[in-house]
Amino acid sequence: MALDSGWKNKSVHMVGVKGTGMAALAELLAASGAKVRGSDGAEKFYTDEILDAAGIPYFESFQAGHLDPVPDLVVHSAAYFSDSNPELIEAHHRGLPVLVYPAALGRFSEGFPSAAGISGVHGKTTTTAMAGLVARALGLPASVLAGSLVPDFGNRATLALGDQFFIAETCEYKRHFLYFHPSAILVTSVELDHTDYFADYDDIFRAFHEYAMKLPAGGLLVYCADDPGASALASAARHQRPDLKLVPYGLRAEGAFRVVERRFVPGTSCFRLAGFAPEFSLGIPGTHNVLNAAGACALVFTLAARPMAEPDLGAVISALATFKGSRRRSQIVGEAGGVLVLDDYGHHPTAIGLTLRGLKDFYPHRRLVVDFMSHTYSRTKTLLDEFASSFSAADEVVLHKIYASARETDTQGIDGRTLYNATARVHPKVVYFDEILEALPYYQRTLKPGDLLVTMGAGDNWKVGVEFLKAAGTT
Image (tube, rainbow, N blue to C red; front, side, top):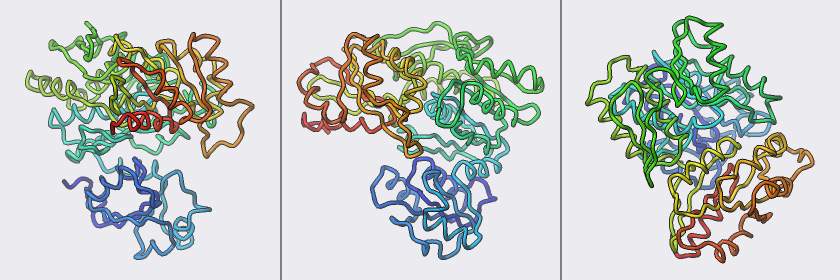
């Protein structure tokens, strides 16, 4: 399907094209008529199949000669730098236009009559995926870009449904979302994170405020009324920009998207929205996902700007009921010997607590064991007490060394045992293995039928769940 004709026949070379966001943008650019090619390392990722299916050629190395023939634009992942990557060095030497991924995403958003940026410290990937399903159910001519693979998108991170609306996950890190050109913004949450960049809560709040102020006259701000930071942002926007349309959602929201009559049965989360008669249901766990679904409906229903007739609602209800989540968001990895293994990307204390409580509601008869690997020294140090108390819903906690970030060299005087000691003071059962696979024999010895093992975090401890299943003869 042709999207933004402004990209038609433009040649784009993408450095780091196998990254989730880069591969997704490559797909959408190709669907817009651009001639896209790229480069990355030789290691295989799930995005290899996506790029191959989209007919996007790519080199599995970085060489200056890959810029021949000369492209109209070079786009690069934020993981690669102009002073070290040979292709970017060559691009600057030749004077070619070069954009980092968030800037390219922002440029792409300019080509749509309406662009909606979904943002928040947590919940934005799932909310974006749900918004895509709701848009498809309503027949909205929208293109969608999520920050992870979505099974309901055909195991891709994108949907190309039309050229009138663009719904995209936008990230607060280093204020990247300020490149985006929104006519609508959804904010799931505002709280302190990325402490290697943001100095404090006020700093990250100012970033979200600046993002909201980018909205044009009459723009739409959808926000979670249950999140103090998002509500504070809405209050500030209401005072400073009375022209904006504010739409709240959640348990504490006023209006059509207030969540009412919430109930959980094993394997299903059920709820109603105040402005609509039918009951909605989700096959994924947690109150946080109920809120994500309410937010997706609030955004897309408002963008659609039409009364929701019964057939419309029926299609949306069906889409949400069968939603399978997204990669690394409470993703079922497998089951062996009665032990269910899930993997989740939650790496902020709030997200951890919400996810674990949701899993406890969803699987009330299973013993919940969480294997967590903290990401970045700065985040762990700044939010140490919050991390330690975030595991309260788990029956057992297994911790590891801190997963270091390439952007961080200072350990700030802490390590994995710092978090272990803090957690052990407030949780009755905590164990520690420095290396992730050191925990495998422990799991083989202690996990019993009926247990739920959740590998959680932005590190690579997901591998221990996979190895547990492999050792049990399950793939």
